[in-house]
Length: 114
Image (cartoon, rainbow, N blue to C red; front, side, top):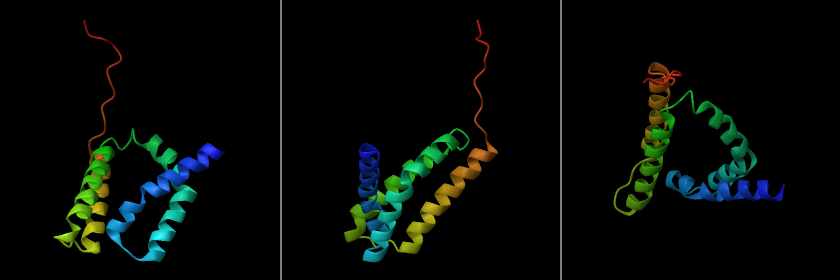
């Protein structure tokens, strides 16, 4: 139990930079981390099973991480509005989900070719 809860706290601490890329409101930062501690692990396991269905999702999540990191690094020089940042994140998830449904992953051929 201690290991599971420690991993929940580590995931919540990991999400602190992401929430600061969106807002600096203390209430939102606290509440998002509280929800991360409460439900992130169960959400991860639920999404891990769906990852085979949404096979383009890991590319989209990689893009989102790069976007958030670039936004944080460049925040002193370039101000990206919160609405734009959330729009990029939402659009990326929608595009990857729709692309995964339109172009399903091919299952490997069970018979080897000689």
